[in-house]
Image (tube, helix red, strand yellow):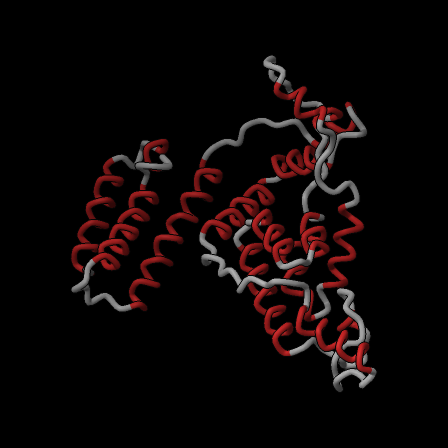
Length: 285
């Protein structure tokens, strides 16, 4: 595999060196230098995974994936560094024209006005794209059902709660500083849920994370994750509208996102100091 890969890479390098003065060709998202090398790595991975007699180790496959991802990052970052950015309206100009400009519109304007922020957003999107495939936890049939059964049983029989078990079933039951915890099965489910939610947030799939919270009978987690969405309301934004009336229909639905995101962000930053919530709020805020 190594010899064929090296010869293919050398061929790509030779072709691109011949066109070194054609920047548009070198940076083409499909046939440019970095995309070609990335595709070579992907082809090698596919061939190795589909071949029953392949002698490629898992370590070599992981190295190839990292190589392909690295070329993808270069393709995402280099064009912006080598070409002139398109002109955009400055955030202060937007606020001067409309002091009620929504947060999402301002965020886009601030990003476009800063080369560094634009590049950081590109890197974040690349991290989303290359994130590991999220793993779904086992389905649950109720909210902390094993803990609930123990609490209800103790109330019915008057025998008292099991030592170390939480007394209440609200979401903050484990954060009261008394050292109490959930039943073992529920604690395991909570850990699996937190890991799955982190993997979805890590991949930028917030809608899937929200849906997972709802399926796990924990809608407050869904609400807290949705708090990361920027406030947007096209009816009060100075944006161009289409003439087909589609925008008007969308505007009639009202605003979306979180109008108090600064307060949400401050709260999440404090909540992230708690180990139980750090896996969710640290990456979102």
